[in-house]
Length: 178
Image 1 (cartoon, rainbow, N blue to C red):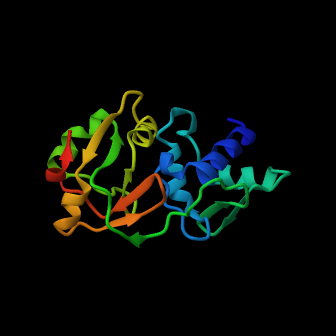
Image 2 (cartoon, rainbow, N blue to C red):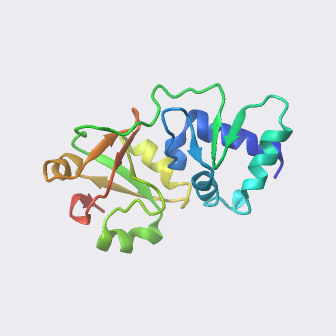
């Protein structure tokens, strides 16, 4: 791993496709370093990534593309996302999708979709995005169909992320088609 390769990957994740990495970016563009490292660790290339690597990447960069403050990191410019991931409660579409590794299916069938180490369950507005997300953990991910409107009418809260991402606190297994 070079710091240039790391910088490119971090830039892509923070500036262009946080939903692919299941990152929760606040309204100022910050994401927890811990969450970024956890997300990157699902790819063998970045499994050894540590906070010090990110600090060195920022400090050694001539172009200063990223900034670290405390336990958070953000890209300074070049964002292509139309909306930041805000937690705006909203009525969801009828159906949303979730890309996941096959090894998690048994647990999801029993427990539903849980946020795990994140604040929210990440859902995709379309199957293409769900496939991209799922491929971070499995080359042939399972795409789950979530009956979002049904869950919403029964009290599940959904939050609008952006045109590709929706968030939820929890999705019960009874709302998921495997």
